[in-house]
Image 1: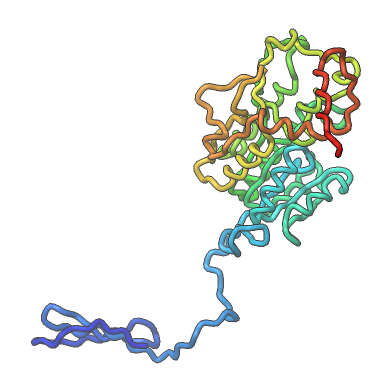
Image 2: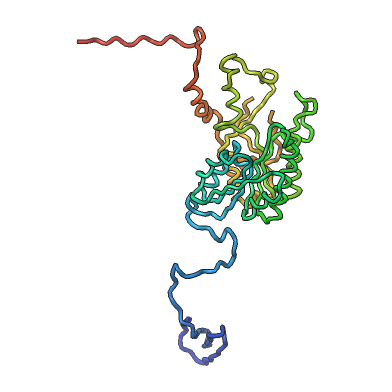
Length: 361
């Protein structure tokens, strides 16, 4: 091998030799104001082929990125999504799969509840693993090879097997602790916008125990994983939600009435579209500046008991263009209108105009 820096002929030329590697020497030629270096090597070089073995200098997941970043690529993200069978989890898994992430889906109970999630990613990129929220061993297996862990586990009512504290506090703490011990780079926790240690009692004398446990769950995650990203969503609407669908139940259709707290005049909602929340979680996965931050997941408009926190960033700070309810709700209600038997009230609609007369020749 020969490398040469050309120099014009001059006076007072000197030559120096020194060893560079065990089988190569460098010759330095000094001239007036110029210098040339010649490296002599005994090693025979050959062309580089795709079949050559290339050792990975940094054996990390990000070093294994392949492709252009689409569904059939691998973007270096291996994400374990706890609570993937829920409403928000399906959208998050879909976002992860379509960008080339490998998704690990721990599930509890019947595997048929999560089987349809196999289609969100390419062949072999979506893996399933049974686990239990109180079993450290099964959780360690689920996040052993992951660099991102997303906790979407939550309950709106208690059961004999799981209380609010078991799910929202102890479960969240356990996931955050085991993720930290496994060396996970990013932990994302989804809480609630109205999480409060002392919520205002409205119907229940002691306030909502669900919101209280959500608040202490956030504190537990911060203690175990200080750089965790926390999302505090308000009402989330979309396909198979519990917000819009509550207005399509039989109370609305048959009884022609819907119970509202104080006629709805003191209730203010700022619903957010579920796809926007999933997009924000994906942005938090990619954004290194999101570590340790808390985001409020709310929509654009207040529609009529969510409380925004002053100074806390929202989804727009993650670059998400929010969807308005006015543009999305008609599409969500379309299936219900198609199969709805509606009894018209007297004078509700105008009489249709008679057809125009046609002259037949």
